[in-house]
Image 1 (cartoon, protein in one colour):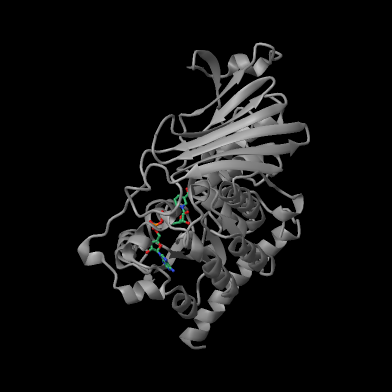
Image 2 (cartoon, rainbow, N blue to C red):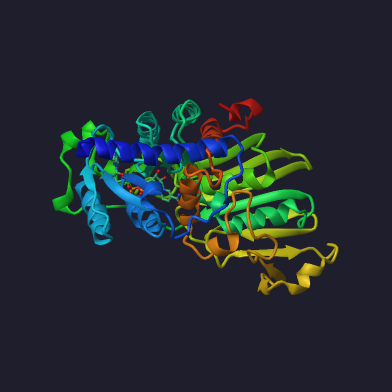
Length: 446
Ligand SMILES: NC(=O)c1ccc[n+]([C@@H]2O[C@H](COP(=O)([O-])OP(=O)(O)OC[C@H]3O[C@@H](n4cnc5c(N)ncnc54)[C@H](O)[C@@H]3O)[C@@H](O)[C@H]2O)c1
């Protein structure tokens, strides 16, 4: 047998192994709940991965966190910008993972025949075409949030995933964050009583203006070929309507996704106001620098009203979400030092409260949220105590890879990402129309 034929045979065996594991999990077979942190990943279950979009999120968070996961091997990097290509490929080489570099994802998909998965961390307007092309090429996809800057694009991803045998994980990483899983369990077990209100905010005092060193400017023709009007647009894409869904998508969707998750339902209505109030005269930006939204939810236990604020002019109290119930309230943030529960005077005393760590929060005694006290393993099979010490995206990536191997279930499949996309993109509509937008239950499904 020629070397090439031999290679193909090995490849088939490896892919067959991975596919049969996924199929077994899909058929509901019991599979051992092995943590992705195992050291035993052999060459036959190594996953070959491409990074598409090696910008801030791709090269500084997802790539380094993947490098901590045994059995994951980067094989290709695709980015249209030379700076990002070099940054990522040099880092990977230093980690003994030399990669082939591409400018065009279609060329990459046509040339690389041994890839198992792609991580897509490009600007939002490219997610749908890139994810669909990767699925067509037989790859599993980790697609960053927001699924798309349009509902049409988000729907295309759900449909493509439903029609394919591969998996798609959407990058709402809090869905696999042990602290958030723990908080969700505390709420589900009734520790807050009936929830009546939720609130959240993402306040930061900057619009992230990115400049470009002269030697890394791209020529206009190349920018146009990839859909960008200028280098400024490529670097600051999140501020222009053609490429992004505004601050409700960029920042708000992380939190509003958690409203939906913790309340067990998407909302029934939203009103919102927003504008380019401060940065408008100082920059060429299009998207609003602040949005304030009021959501209404009809949960099984009754109505819940929610308030969400995103602002790029003030860092006041940073970012978090809070859940207020008749027995107590819970506040949680991806910043691991922010996570506590306050019980109302009227709340029935529970034994575990005496054992919990306490702190003072705004003049009240607060119970620190301690992962592992009430929960050790999730239904996905992840050891939450171990995962609590990892950087924020790593458990979500591990969940993606473990799901490919049939060892876990995805925590954020496209159907969930779509619900969130509808929830935030229609808040933009409420701002534009300056009136309440009603949601129909059916619009959250594809
Ligand atoms: N989950 C999170 O916490 C989180 C945090 C930040 C960003 N994100 C998401 O990650 C994605 C990337 O954001 P970012 O901040 O890294 O942006 P960025 O501008 O820093 O990086 C984007 C990269 O994609 C490249 N690119 C653009 N178009 C491309 C194309 N067609 N093919 C290949 N490469 C292309 C750019 O050259 C750049 O290197 C966005 O979807 C964003 O919403 C998620």
